[in-house]
Amino acid sequence: MRESDATIRLLTVDDVDAFRLIRLEALRLEPLAFASTLEDWKALPEAEWRRRIEGDPIFVAFHAGEPIGIMGLSRQRASRMAHRATIIMVYVRTEHRGAGLASRLLHAVTDHAGDIGVRQLELAVSAENQVARRFYAREGFAEIGMVPGGYLHEGHEIDEVMMARRIRS
Image (cartoon, rainbow, N blue to C red; front, top):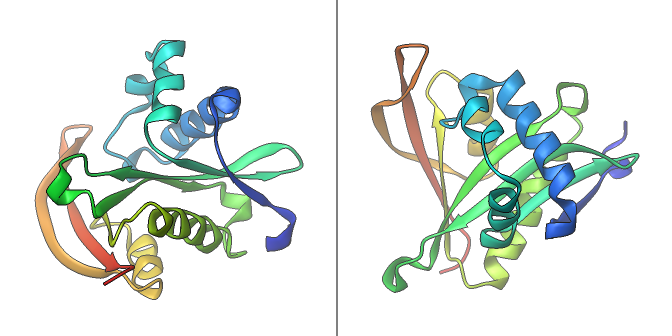
């Protein structure tokens, strides 16, 4: 697949099936990459899936009508922190990696964030995920700290690296 073959768009509640498909796939295939578990999300009722689409912007990359990548944005709610947002749910199908799709998703999320007044993007990534850490560094994110034992996976503590990038001053 060429990078240009994929379309990226902001989901609406009409896209709940595509959202469910790509989110559950991500959690099933890359369990170490997320603080949430497959079981957490499989148990959600339909109304909660729809609420999550309406609550935070979620962008999905589609190829031939199938969802192949996802990235969301969770904005801080407190008025003094509303200039900050967290990148969430980052995943691209293995066979579509290396074609610039993650960068395109990040740019779509960043553009949207800027349009709604966000000045700083933040994220947490597993300290063990060197590929993701290098990707975010290439995209202008700086490591700003670490949460030791940020989440548990099969009884093991996984450290999380906190990263941030200014998008507006």
